[in-house]
Image: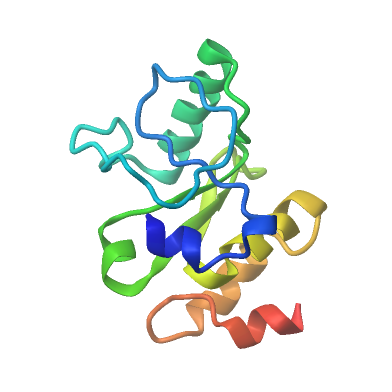
Length: 143
């Protein structure tokens, strides 16, 4: 988690690590992260859309200051290659969608999502052209 925080501009960092659906979250996570991720996190093994539903419920239940329509998922691959899933949801089909991106562009892409810039579908198309399925920074700079 700290590598993710440290690779993003602190002035544009609006991510909070959510691992417990009973806690109230009101501010972005900061480095150093002193709490390990829970091996029993309710998000483990869930789809992007299921995570969206859980975050929406967290917002309703606790009044947490989170954006459940624009979020990120860190998974096992995140540990290996410093990428994560950036999610937007739900789409017109009713499902939340995601694109895999490097840590260092996550904040910028999320700001684009929130500002009505390119959406997840456009980024998915660009990432699909990459051998590893990760959005390439060169494409991001052209958007």
